[in-house]
Image 1 (cartoon, rainbow, N blue to C red):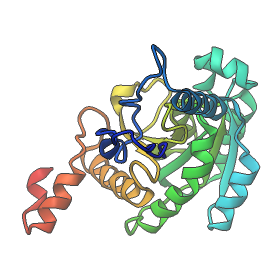
Image 2: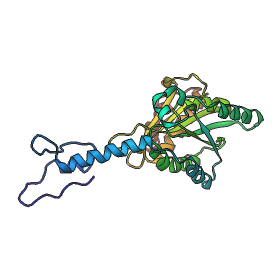
Image 3: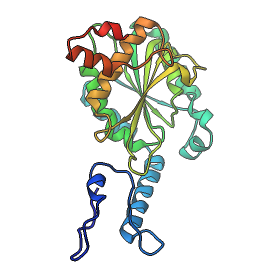
Image 4: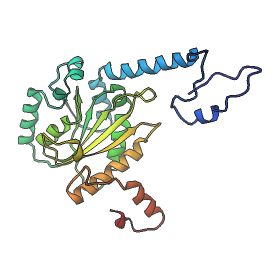
Length: 269
């Protein structure tokens, strides 16, 4: 974030040092009883970026091409919400596949023989900008850090999708775990934040208490490599415990710290 240079004869603002370390809107100053013009314009820009993140459609074909260039097989699906306006008004439709894609996945699963340990579902959610920016580097990091013996399925690219859509997709493809990489609701300083929702043995009707969430995946928040490491830690713990959600506490940071200090990481599980 940039700020107006100090004018001659005006003492420096003591809040400048703090503002250099955060994108939060604090100590904005005032012009009479209102905000300074510069801050009002910045707020308007941030609000417009957040609205754009919600409403601009995901370029699913471009994303698929980018992921295929990384060596990923991709599979496009669409929710039961036919368009963006319906998606925003009817969250329930965003949680289920359209009939045609549900039938196609059911047929694909019946003909397939390869088991899937972890299925990645990329969903536009409430920020197509987050998906376009963060999903490719995150998926690349996930694939590079994959533990030996883990089978990844094709990357499913879901449009007009909510988190729970991954439950139906994962169940139809027979995945042990599904990780939904979804655009989070944009904030006024973070229109491009991606979230990861991990669910063990996904089935239609799973609730949020059965999931683990990794939030704020972006360079200014949790970088892709760190997010991938946390996801794989949760995946391995989920396999061992046979669950995700409130029963699986994310102790990945503590285990990393214990290992760095020569402690017994197993005691922290």
